[in-house]
Length: 67
Image (tube, rainbow, N blue to C red; front, top):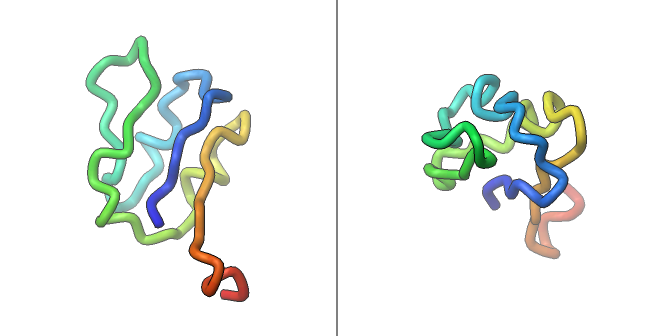
């Protein structure tokens, strides 16, 4: 599952800058980045680790919770 940016986002752009798969796009820097290429997500967690406010979430299907 691709990452999701929740309402905690402070529009810092760290996720956009750090993502090795270029999953995010940030055309309007007054708004939060968007997950533009969800299929390209490697689930590396770099965006979640770099987010200063914990605004990045991953939703895994129930069967994948033990991975």
